[in-house]
Amino acid sequence: MKSKDRNARARSGAETDRHKKAQRKGASDAPGGGEIARVERMLRLRRPLTDVQRAAFRSRFSDAQCDERGGRAKSGPVLREGIDWAERIQKTLEGPHEGLRYSEERFTWLLECLLGLARERALRKGAQGSPDAARCLGEQARAASLELRDDLAGMLAELAGGVEAEVEALAKAQGTAADDRELAASLRALAGLAEDWLRRGGDVDRALVASAGLTQAHAQAAWRSADELDRAAGDVAQAASDAPDIASDGAAPGEGGQGDTGERDATALARAEGRLLREMAVAMRSFAEARRKNRSIRKLAPGPATRGVLKPRKTRASEPEAQGFEPEEQASAPEAQPPEPEGTPAAQPAPDHEASHHAALNGHA
Image (cartoon, rainbow, N blue to C red; front, side, top):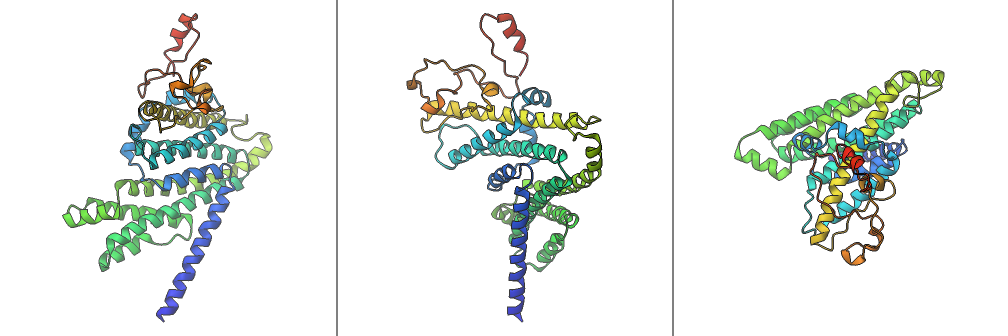
């Protein structure tokens, strides 16, 4: 009998794994799905941010500053270049990086900004396409939520151990994930159980929580994931209802159709792009400063997509290689200048003989 139960559980687990793989494959076929998957893979390796950390990083640049910087370059190439930077940063942080004052948390925030731009692009493309695109994005949200649910349930199972009451509480909270509604309810119940553990004040409970690696950020991530599932379901319904309007108007939302939906979509996309560019500038300054102290750290050099925004001045052609720029960086490495305080708009450079024009632009990011 026990052997049959084990076989049944094994078959169930195999079916769940196949279901997840199919969902991930379908999600990667969605507009921008491949880019989203690349960023999410990096994010899964990192400890999630707390809401306080996220709010702190977001407060460094206002929405107006992000709006101003966004839209200066094409969002697709900016996103791809940002992902390349993130992969380089990840490799640097995994090895010795003395002298680099760029925190793990700040890198996680950069990844969240990348994910935000990737999703905005996917949502806009989905709005310009068919309801199938929205469904693919919904499947992507479900796949990510299932992985988060498994991770959180695993930590809570470690905390429960063999205590019958704790095991029963976890089983009740975990529930099922047969559809998105039940999955969202499961995530919220698990988040509530996690917060219950985090509130416990006993020394034994605190030791167990620390050993399992459970933090408030995990609970907050579960709450957000449940909300994203609800929004994805709403997007699918909205896309289905908008489909006839797109066909009759002859223009998709964000492509000159009637109403202000396109304007709102464009603003959200530009803001996400601008916030990413601001964070890329923070990383670029940190790596440039670190290289002056540690030659093993490579600079983050703007490429064709971001050079006009992150490095508007041309590097002097006569700049010697002895100053520390690697050959691939000579054409695009920024000139040495004082670091820009976070949250302060960066001056737009102009020719020296246009002093008044230069001064006027200093008030803008």
